[in-house]
Image (tube, rainbow, N blue to C red; front, side):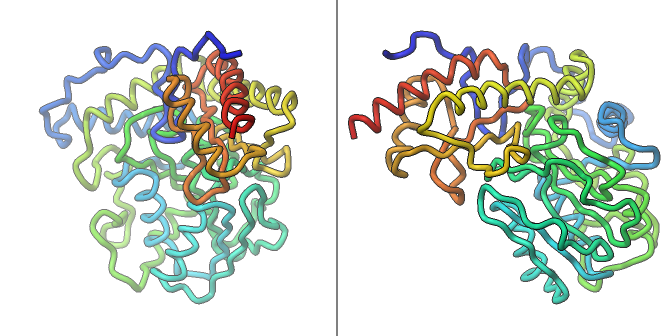
Length: 373
């Protein structure tokens, strides 16, 4: 029978993601609006973004945090264009965003000594083949594949090259071994449900040393420049952004960070996300007509949770539309480049109770469409 109870919040998009529970636009601290981001007040709030991010995430000493243009994509591109070229590169990809970095490294930067380790959707590449004397580029969580890196044990502490990690759908939801990573990027609109257009760039001391000792042979646009006269532009990591940020988005992000602190910190947001995955794991175990896209249980993402159904692509599309029309799940179709299926966001801003209410609706929609097709 058709379920009667709907999720209180049907926003299960994988980005931009749902706002945190209790979010109230009217509660944002917006005294910076209409003010210059270069004002003392503006710079103070931007510096607060950097310092609170480092504090809440528990970054190692001397790691640096900056707000940069163009969301996570801009942060990754800034790292690739500013740091690569000094040595050979290994790049790993198992979904569309990782494959995008492969394309840019080979076709835009034209780095000829590049090795690509790719895997199909649902799988991970063979990490044992990676040479860490080379620079290594990879995503921590494949947002369009629902496949995450289980841990950082495959990354040595005595590596020669840099590790550059796109972690936009992992930060604040997965246990990140920061000492293993030299560059980490993420965006506000993912796990914290913040607003788009701004990226976060985290650099280790090794990455800073590379910036100060190496200049790439290609021109760098202004929005990519992290050094001045051969030294790190420290101001960028103290809130002096390269271009004009949205102070409304900054206020929104600071509100999200305050919410994380109210829960008890990043350990609590990780636990919330893992609890969300548990709800869907139980549902999958009880139904033989769907399964996780991820083949290895250890690699199942707890944020971008991707499912395949025993159904034709058009049937899946119709199921997604039906759930949308019923107002129980918005934007849960798989990414256009991924196999047909469902992609349900399970980050910390999603309540497990809403996922529990959603599961019967998925069963109902499947039977409505597939049995009557």
